[in-house]
Length: 379
Image 1: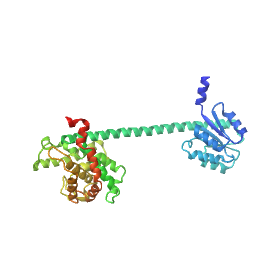
Image 2: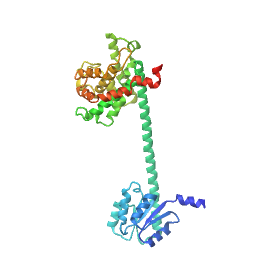
Image 3: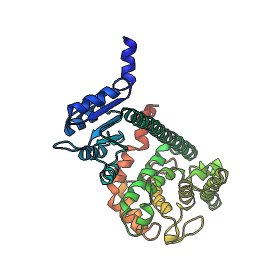
Image 4: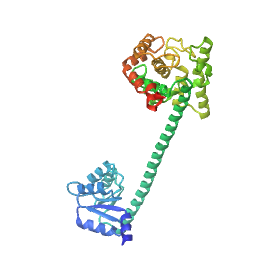
């Protein structure tokens, strides 16, 4: 008895819809030994049964009162839950126009009345087999799509962690905490979001994933500092002219390290292109007096111009072993004075519009706050 029940549960389900009880009885008797049968004499009730049970196939009479078979079929195909259920029309009409209409609505076959038992069983079996194959392929496709998403997220997470680890190593050599890179990437994103609709920036910032790429590339801006000797990088006092020239090489050292990574990879990516721009260009100045290439104005990549202001702001408001912190107001005035000299004037205007966000980011991710949370403040 348990075996019969198990067999019944695994058999395909067929919904038969016909307003004539005799026709329902005939079709049910033809198919009940091989399939689980659901029946309905009304179109609306058939739709309710289909939504609730999701049968494997529907045998649907065309001529019915209130809602005919064509209307039922249209509703089935409009519903994402039932649209993949194959529909076979049952009809006494032999009109090619009627058949064409049914196929246009999404039916898979026609069986004319009076039915021939062998033909009914054969066509039902064929379409159930086709549906089983389609379901298998659909499930496989969905599984593969989900697996691609999962693995892509995994790769992205590994990339993000690797970037932050590399950037943090560079920052720790410079007597700074990892919060500097976290703050600067947040500043860059605030500026980029503000400028997204600006006519000078929209073509760049509205590209797919442009702002996210900026955000993820920003932590690498000082990666080249790993190539600067400790006696210069960690010097608590002012650098000599010769030492400063060596310090300035960190911009191109960073670019060259990323270019080596590109060569190993074998092709360029948006992320690495952006990282190169930021690394090499964030010390360039709007008036051309910066380094390493002395670029000016729009010749400086937008990514580097955004990073320049973010980096200067954070460096000035942060306390370092060689200098005290400055107030936001003093830093703001310094940045305003650098408008159209050090910084792109429109980026300065964006900073002024979003300065409250800069203050909030700094307070939330301040070095003192990070030390307190980790227990370092009492050490």
